Length: 166
Image 1 (cartoon, rainbow, N blue to C red):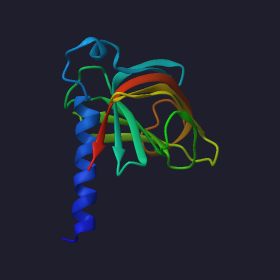
Image 2: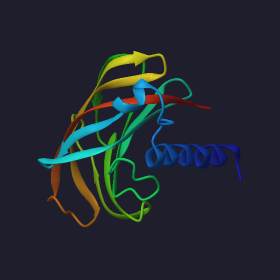
Image 3: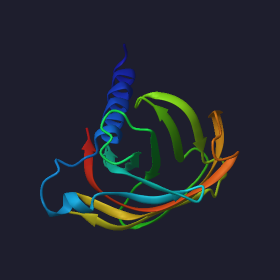
Image 4: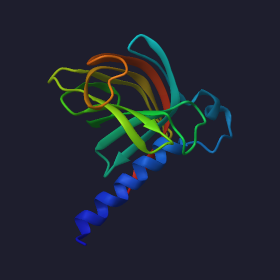
């Protein structure tokens, strides 16, 4: 195996762990406010939020639903941007994904941002190991069942601990 492939496998495992377990030890005053509160296709969507900063410049922000699902999440959402601090980042084609899961790991449906101007990730707070802000994007069904139609809108606010990798 090449070191590049090993690195990609390691990154994938880290992101999946963050999505399925959240990034808080459940203690301290900030643990209570960590999470993602949103709407997806007009319905309430709530999850455990995570943020992973890869090599200091790529931010993966996401969440797994329902809250406290651990390894049996029913859905996940993630975004990816080149990060440089609090700002509003455009989300283009492929930068945002929402997936439906069974048993925490079996993919049954996937929605992906498919336009150049699909939405935004607005980071309003960043520091002391935490990140907060808002996210909004339009996504189109790309795999499996399309339980909310061919396209739908995600909009919400988040607060999460930031983990760095490597």
